Amino acid sequence: MFLTFVASEKNKSINKVKYFIEKLLSKNFNRSDLIIGVGGGITGDVAAFVASIFKRGINFINIPTTLLAQVDSAVGGKTGVNSNYGKNLIGSFYQPKLVISDTSFINSLSRKEIICGYAEILKHSIIKDQKFFNWLEKNTGLILEKKTQVWSYAIKKSCEIKIHFVNQDVNEKGLRMILNFGHTFAHAIEVINNYSKRITHGEAVLSGMILAAKLSVVRKICSPKVLHRIKNIYLKNNFAYTYKKYKNHRTINRLIPYIKNDKKNNDDKVNFILLKNIGKTALPNKSKISINNFKKLSKAISQY
Image 1: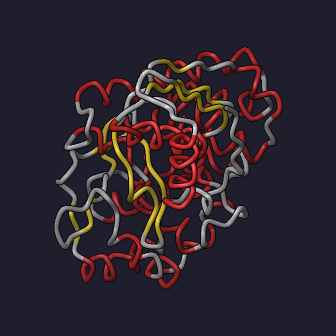
Image 2: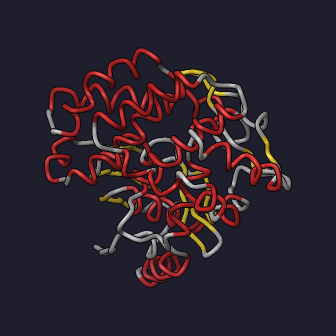
């Protein structure tokens, strides 16, 4: 059976999951059968979530076709769909039997889609590997220009970093939360923009990482020099457009209703992942900030 799916954040919903489940039931699928998801991260997330809950788990293979999916969403076993209250708030952890990444798919991607995947590559270097970050300072342009000789290295390094955290904390109770650096802001940006195609997940992540780095400086756990290095990559590669809208504390504060629903939060404070240096973050649950305090800090954030 072959089922098509129009991949969009709005279609990444519980209604679509119900539709696919009913299709599988109508064809009498059972646990020994197999679902193969072919597409980007949205397709992979939905297909994996369907596989995880259908008869309490059916075999699943993921074939990611975008750079974003190959470096991030296809690895680690997270599945999920969106709700009106936030992104990926309905989901499960479910590992695929196999992930097949073919870099030839990347040739068909637009620059916007390449940037979308690159955001997660950059994030992985920032949170774990200073040498990889140094390499990206020199080679980001080649990635954006689709120079195939750099793809394999960048994808491999990204996957290794993500797997490092996943293997230590499969169900995201602690260290794996570090992979969400920048995502508290990014998911809020996506929701407040009603999951519009005008801003991709990667562009939201690029915005979110700058905001998280600024907050890290404001909280005095990170040097302004670190923020400057990250900003330089943005300026050199024309990424600054992603965060210009959030230079004003009023636009930052508009994100608060959605930041409050971030899935890392386990009390009435926001559980931010903050940066100490290139390659090292503060530990999860060590940078919780109340909403009232965040409102005060947003003015300082906007000054950087």
